[in-house]
Image (cartoon, rainbow over all chains, first blue to last red; front, side, top):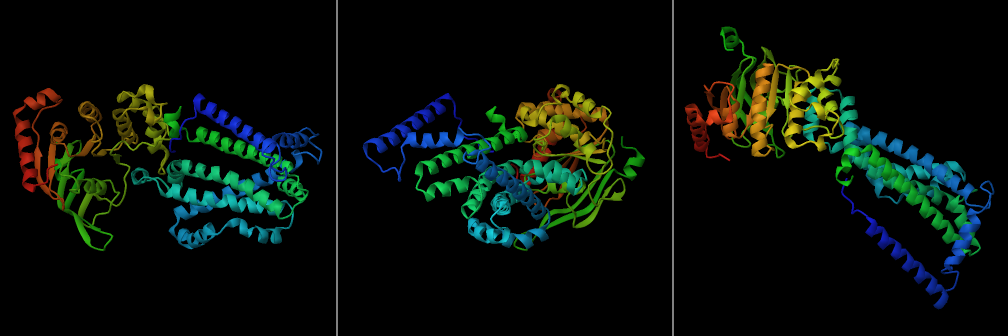
Length: 264
Length: 264
């Protein structure tokens, strides 16, 4: 919705230079300031760890591929589940005052609660398997969609609702043709948050105990003070996060085509 | 147009029509005060008055969007209880749906509200008539303000209603575009034979377009005078200013509104 500052060729040049400076400083700090490797591993050690995780048979349990797939697929299922339920409940709340009155107090209470704190409870309920990962991902993805879809659906200009009333449009027609498209930018802003939260949820579940996943890779590396290994796993997760984020943005540009007229 | 039958049964009739709003603080606010109206089939009547005089409320009641508190309001002899298929509403600032193409916006009334009507080229004919023939596939944000409002008029005409209600339709346009739209509306009215009720706060627009000009007072809105405009049609912007009746009527309206002390 709001115009973001455009990153032209100039912007990416500055970003590239910044990265180089950061890497040089990192390298210099390790080499000349003798920062111990269990605090900050050398860049080349991280690269080596990355390589050893990437340059393996994808079916091997030593590489990143299987854990990444486990984390990603569970986060994706949780994301879809959480977003679907969030949109459904957000829509019901926006459409029916009774549902709003009934649900709003709980939604607010839960919203202000740090939801990862519920994760141990969910692990008790769902066990150390994929169920917990999906459930925590879904829980974290649910709230931004619930709040954003509710806010978006309620913020339709009254003239647009007058228009639909003047045409004797049904409630469903008004929802489908006016309210939902109007709320789309709000919902996408929620999806943007939810996609990262879902990943976070899966990782948290894996920290609490799981057979496989990127969270397990991190805790195993930590257990043997393989800090370079932890860094490498974080780089992988960072890349996945950026890819997911930009995928949502790209889909938004497709769907909410009328909202980006100034940026074509 | 005004033969004995029309006089006996006007298309839109109001007697002692009142509208009271209850404000947030619980006080009641009289917006429309004992308004009497009689608008015949095929007439183009303009309503002029200061801002907040209840003229929009009056129009909304005729459109079936607002309930009236007291009095009688009939459409073709039947009390108005809600939106009617005989009425098309043209809103301020076009009020198009930005996520739909111009053609889909114009076709909207044919797709919602129960009875679905086959288009059979009607939408294209309307777009053609208003000079939007080439723009059906465009989106509202690609159109100028004047073109957007032409699309808004097309949409209101889509169900071929007997009555067109227009709430300051050209208020947001620049002076030149507004004059052109006035000419165009006169042409559309003469071609289609619709009954049009148009609200404006421009005295010149009210006289140029109206068979009659109804002057309303500041809140609570009352009918101050109902002035016939005996200037022959088709009117042009040059001939109307030269016509002796124009200055006379303009002075009369200005006098009425000045006496109210509320002219914009």
